[in-house]
Image 1 (tube, helix red, strand yellow):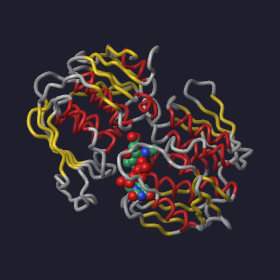
Image 2 (cartoon, protein in one colour):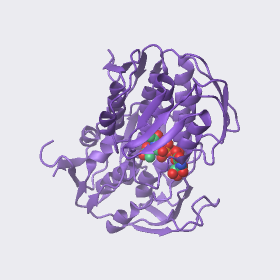
Image 3 (tube, helix red, strand yellow):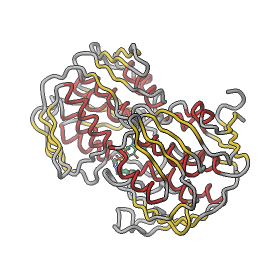
Image 4 (tube, helix red, strand yellow):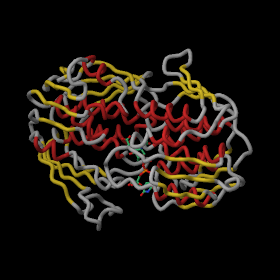
Length: 441
Ligand code: EPU
């Protein structure tokens, strides 16, 4: 690519046609890399995508003495935690604002070193994204936390102890925090109201391979019996169901057909049902799923995001672009993040008709109902989209803008595409491979 690397010209109006491959899930791989810190021996992780979150976590692990090298297979990392050591605060701080994953270093570093320094977090601006649950649970394990100007400093005055925790909300990150801390804590930890996203189950598989004892009950209670030591693991990361769904929505919105190699039906059941209700077609094959627009009008739907096994919030933004092409009124109720619908303003500039509401427009009132957040949307369609100047707000919103620009008539200038690199491997190569007409500005 030449020119301005962060601005993309998208010449819209061409259906995406072809095939791409998704690799390991962005929301599992960096966490499995953190888990390697807990082991006494090297771990081997396969199906690792080349995305920014992986590079950030690799850098942080290396600062703490973990040797990370690529394995013999493409997308394989070998992580050796034999010489874990304290890292320089200034070096850690260089990663401030780059990702949300550093918060998950707390438990493993407290176990390995007795202390941990966590820089300011990054991640998408889709709501307040507090970390109060994380610190509450760490305190329950016996950690002390001190807020310093440069970040958070944690200490474990003695071995962390298993505890009984009930989460106020089934937070994915906090559930992972508990898992990564409880496995080496003394005694039993019982976590109720846990999140059970497929990426969490995969992290449980990783930890079990390392020697952890973890059971998952049908009522979303997780029980962890702490052990004295863990070994390494060999694991192939589950595929990225969020990236797969993004390409599926791109196929639908552009009236194209995309075969997503590596996509797995099991983790996408809820998405696939919704895709079918909207009028999208898909075929599950041995090595992936083919998604396409079968012709004819798409159908409006009512949609509510939720924790797993509900409709994942990260699927919402790409699907909304496809809903602008559906006949009638679609209703979207976002119940996981309070501010994940702001991206629709740019879609309206492109010709979409999306109205936001503070009320809960879904069947179930959510945490945001009485709190003045624009967290419900009514999308009326179909509307023709016109090219526009677009500034990417966050990862999934950014990919949604790409989809909208690809579906629109004319040439859009999309600013801030670097943000998409955080979660979409090689998308700059994948797009032309699908026939998209894109070029650096
Ligand atoms: N929350 C709190 N306090 C906390 C933690 C969370 O109030 O201490 C609230 C959040 O503000 C939010 C809700 O709980 O309203 C859910 O947050 P959660 O902790 O589940 O999210 P996360 O762990 O920060 C992960 C993914 C997100 C994904 C969510 C929900 C990673 C790195 N990120 O975030 O992925 O949307 O779970 O499934 O795993 C993305 O991939 O684009 C992305 C944002």
